[in-house]
Image (cartoon, rainbow, N blue to C red):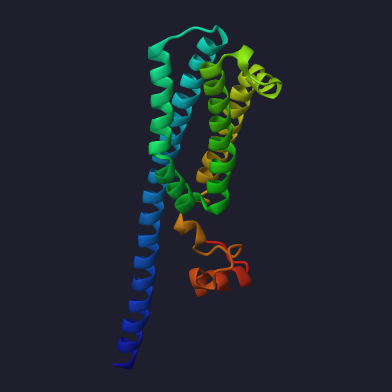
Length: 198
């Protein structure tokens, strides 16, 4: 009877551990899929915004009026801003605070700045700008290229973190770098202590 009780208790703990691991793996799979969708969504939004900005820059440089291009440029800005907070929130959830800050302060800021420069030039004309603003307008193409490079770098970093499994809440499980002891199992610590791989 004592052996049966011991077997039942050991079986219970092993089953609980297996269920926990299965749950973690399921959440990890779901987080991976959500991160893929997020990267795709951000990539498409960046491409659209930069494409419309480039098209608008071209007509501004030529001093042309093209209501279709101007309208599409404005719609790309509105579409970007309409989903901006949602994307920031998702980046924060899956990739953390630093990635969210980089998205806002680097990727978004560079596109916003070049858009403001182009809108000013389109509204006032190059000849009517101050020398500082003329200099900014002449560098608009380089700013677009720099924004494109920064955006590509940001997306590459997100993809690399996803490939390494360094995303979402499941990345905190058994992660001794994080320092959250509640997320580290005793079995994992014993394996590390005795250098056991599994």
